[in-house]
Amino acid sequence: MNIKKIVITGGPCAGKTTAMSWIQNAFTQFGYTVLFVPETATEFITGGVAPWTCGSNLDYQKCQVKLQIEKEKLFEQAARSMKADKILIVCDRGVLDNKAYMTPAEFSAVMDFVQSNEVELRDNYDAVFHLLTAAKGAKAFYTTENNSARIESIEEAIALDNKIVAAWTGHPHFRVIDNATDFENKMKRLIAEISSFLGGPEPYEIERKFLIEYPDINWLENLPNCQRIEIIQTYLKTLNGDEVRVRQRGIDGNYIYFQTTKRSINNMKRVEIERRLSKEEYLQLLMNADTTRRQIRKTRYCLTFGIQCFEIDIYPFWRDKAIVEIELSDVNDEIKFPKELKVIKEVTGDETYNNASLALNIK
Image (cartoon, rainbow, N blue to C red; front, side, top):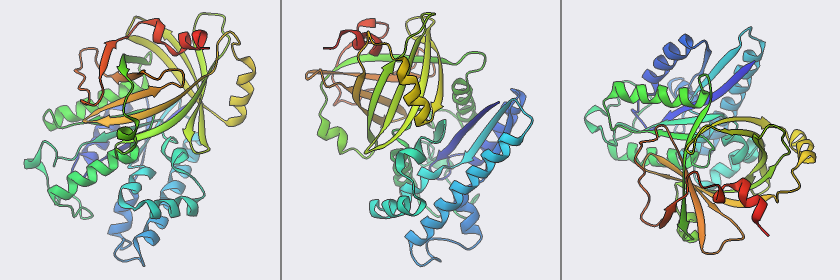
């Protein structure tokens, strides 16, 4: 049984409601049973429960986050009972959307209330797709008339959109869909991104990699749209030439675990299969570590810049350089780097800079 849970999020008037219809039509045809988790904020606000009707915004957020978590658990429970081979659970906004409406102190209090943490709640989804508000690049189409819970002006919509992007930055599969085309093609690009993630017959990953000068860490850590992640990566023994690794990913003692299998198709395209592990499974798989390779420990800065998501890897054995990677939907997509990142050269396809090779050569 193949169950995937994704988030469709975005700023105000971004097209989420229409996107749900497109997703239903497209992925039902692709053989998926599609389940939709309704947006909790809209349910609450239209029902009379809102930040301005509760005792405080914190009181409201505790209720909203708690309900959202429980709803998603019940949808997953229901999905596991269904007689279907492929199920796609689509969340109309995810738990981390709520972070955009809270102060850091409020968010911390809510995490304590639900007895969870940011890493666990953010990375509980398989993928996150953010539709940019029409206020960014399509102002003529921005309206509050089609959603009684929407009250933001254009300027407020842009600011909120930025906060939502920042809240989700750091997720391992976060994609931003902009307003560079008309609305119909925006929806088509969303469907293409989801299809690419789900893999079709084979889950291709198009990735480009660059060697850069050692970046300004203070600059990265002070950006609202940048998240620091600590990663420990261990390669496993294999017999068929595939690259198999397990990874611990998180921050401040809060971690999730993955196993990834990669097979190269060409320099920029690979088949990649990834599955989530429990901590117990992860520790068990470590017993099959390839002892000819060192563990890779690195600090990753996930940076959302425009609509592109960069992964900047800082290694403890380098003081003058780093690696930046970006996943693309098309090999011809243009990459726009922040001016603060100084590219030395592209190293896509250069095995010298693969983590697997670094694990063989680091001292």
